[in-house]
Length: 408
Image 1: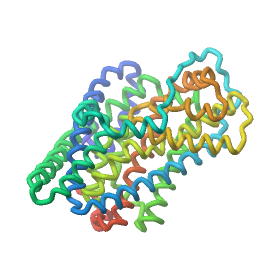
Image 2: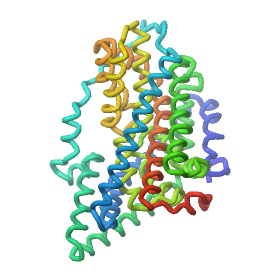
Image 3: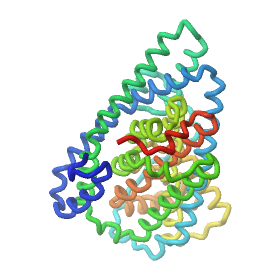
Image 4: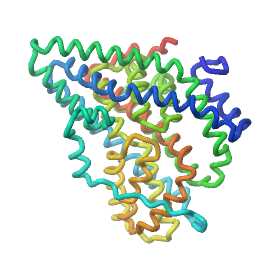
């Protein structure tokens, strides 16, 4: 129950007005939200580690990992490409950068994005223990898969290790459920704090940009991910959207795909009927690879920069910018506002100078928190839609559980 005594979604109905009424005093509630985020982040790395090892070990045949992983990556890439194209189209339609005035904007320089080679190199950890300690999700995923495959290859002598990780996975999911008991209070505090700090009128300053982002997120979530379920998985989309509000709310309030992962795994297995083997493989990969909201946002900001600086770009440049956006979105860290600091690599393909990029980032950054909250939602729904689709293909989906209402 939430503070207002209603159901699990009640923080939405009470946090906004409380934030408006309290104004800057709502900052006094922020520690509750911060505590909630810390609780979630506490379980992310150990949950990813033990769940992937247990999931791979439970497959019995390493070839199934290749099938699940290959299909997962293919679908993530497809939805990201659609998100980039959608972002560019909405940027052209809304024209948020037309006639913009950068006077008074404090430039915010960003560093160069890592090259694709560096991103691939960083997947392999020099020290797996250090990767666990530092929360390097991609490196943890890589080592976890290797360990799970090794358990399968060793066979019966490694049964005790397999059972240990299976028990560990169950323990971490139980801890996640306990953490989610305080979720309504954390969500309430975060929404009230953001509303009180910046006010609901914040979107008036960047109305067109916000309109493009919100429209894009709605289309990507409801249409693209809905069609993925309906046309590819051959499942009704309504049960999916009915059963994922817990994950969506945590994604929105934390602005972090990584922080949402424990909740997404619980929702996938308990509400959507996805098997543990698929959920523990597809969702952690999606945390760092599937960034539909990031791709959409960078696509919109690319058109924003083109319009703001009056650039003449060719279709080839737009295509190159789109391909670059896919790469940087895949390599974007699953933390708040990470996409802004990957923007330089994309804008450089359009002839935008580093100084102009700094102006764009400086203009957007003060308002980015609410926009980031919005675009994290399609990141999360994309992960879950792909997990359901892959589970359906692999015969690892409990369709009865998918269609049934979750137990309160």
